[in-house]
Image 1 (cartoon, rainbow, N blue to C red):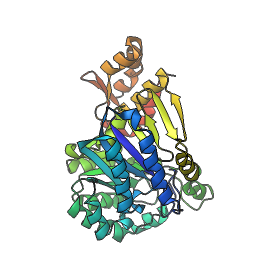
Image 2: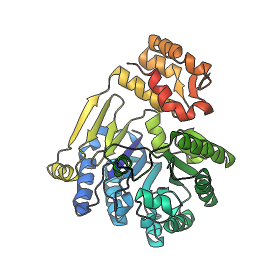
Image 3: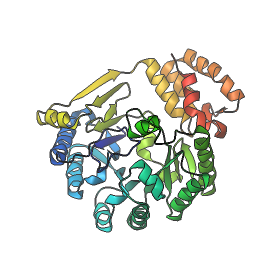
Image 4: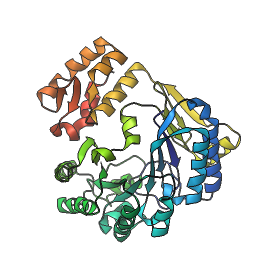
Length: 374
C-alpha cells in the first residue's frame, strides 16, 4: 500500500470557497481521536504485508489537534502497520496555528513535511476568502517553519476576480523569498452550496473571470520555471526531490487507505468512502463498525480515472499500461481519439506515452474528458 490518508474534520472558520467535510465545532475532538485509532486497528488486517510509504494528515485543519493528539495517532499507526523508515509524513497546517512553540513541538514528531495553507499574502484576499489567518501571520509562520523543516509546501490560490496580475506575481515572489521548494497552486472555483456561490448569486461578489484565471496560470508557469521548479502535475510545482510522494501515488493509481469521516480508500479495483458525518462516524467506531460505502470500479471507470490523472502529470499516459490493463483495442481507440489533440499540439506522443503540452496544460481536464470511454 502506498499510503494512509487521515482526515481531520475540524476548522476554526469556514472558508467561503470550501466544500470539504469539516466542522467548526471541536467539542468531539477527543472522541474523534479514539475513533480514528479504532478504525486504524480494525483495518490493519487489510494491509498486513504491505509497507506504508507515506502518511498524510488532511482536512479540515489538522493543526487544530494538539501535538499529543497527533502522537496518539502515530503510536497506533506504528504499532499496527509497517511504516517505511523513509516514509513521507505530511501535516496540513494553517499559519495561525504555527507559532514558534507549536512548530518546535511538531519538529520533534514523526512529521517531516508541512503543507501550509497560505492562499495569499494579501490581506484583502484573505478577508474575502474568510481565512482565519492574516498576511502578517502567513509570513511569520514561514519565517519560523523554514528554520525547523526543510520539506515545506505552501498552497496559493489564483483566479480571484479581484486579484491583479501584479498581485499574483507578488504572491509568488514572496513565496520564493522564503526558499520554498514546492508549491500547490489552485484556481479559485465556485463549488456548489458554498458561501462563495451564494455571494456570487446575490451579486455581492464578482463572478469568476476565466480569461484572468488563464492569465494568472501563464504567470505561474513563467515564474516557477524561472525558479527552476518542475511543473510535474497540473497544480503542483517543485524541485524533483520535493515532489509530493503521497499525492503522486494517487495520480499513478497506487492503493491507499483513507481514515476518518469522508475519507476515501482504493485497493486497485474497489473504492470505498467513510460516512461524512462526525457524530455518526464516532458512534459507529465506538461499536467497532466502520461506517462506509463502496463500489467496484468498472473497466470504463478505471480507464477514465487513469486518463484524467495521467494527463495531469509530466509522466502522462503509458500506452503499454493501457494495453496491459485494458487491451489492444482500447489502446488503438485512444490513439485514434487523441489525433485531433496531437494535431493541435495540446498532446504529444513521446516514448510511448501521451503527454500534455504547455499549451494544453490549462485545458487538461477537458482534453481528458474527450478521451474517456463512455
